[in-house]
Length: 267
Ligand code: NAD
Image (cartoon, rainbow, N blue to C red; front, side):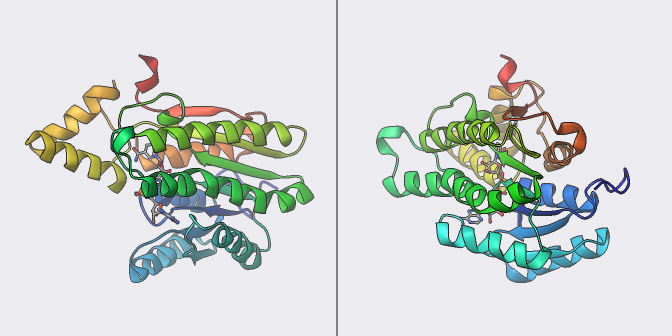
């Protein structure tokens, strides 16, 4: 039901998890700009989140609603899908983006951090997909985009839970893509390299204090170690790719894990 090329997602409705900050907010903006109604989800200052909601709704003329579910809790994931369905009448697009990080060697990795990362970065994707698929199957149209990571395809040290969860997200993406292969529903993953968000700023600040160097120097070291372009990918880059994956032209892109990584995986 494509109405015009500038707003290719007019009449569609999306949930973007973890969209009160960083990459998720960039995706929510890109979807809204494409004419899509959006449910924002995540934590943060309620007044600031309400300001974002109003901004997206008025700037892009879409419906924008807020949901504060804690996605580490399966019942709250289901509530989020139910609320979006009531608000919009349908959920056509699900972007599983919410994620957290903790770094420590595996033999020192706190059990509760392992459990929290697996619950938020992996299990929430399963519960949201499970909750939304029946209505997508009923309409024979849907787009599921899972924000994995380059760490869904390769590992780094001190990120055991994150690497395990993101590899599993890539596996889940393929499994769902196969189960929906003869339908109008696609499921794909995006694998960002470094994107400068609060999640990464914390790792830069930790590096700066650990190595007693300036934040600018720590930023260059972080990029230089992994990302050959020496530039961050941006939330806008991830948002634009998400919009493309939701377009008719992407109908036969199924079960892939697309890097946006400044060359990280090329070496
Ligand atoms: P961020 O910290 O800026 O944003 C995370 C968002 O998730 C926030 O809106 C936060 O409120 C929300 N969130 C966290 N736990 C939640 C929970 N239990 N329930 C509901 N919402 C919750 O992080 P970001 O860098 O924008 O990361 C977004 C996604 O992109 C994550 O899945 C992350 O793993 C992935 N990613 C990020 C990078 C990067 O370089 N920033 C690279 C690869 C992948």
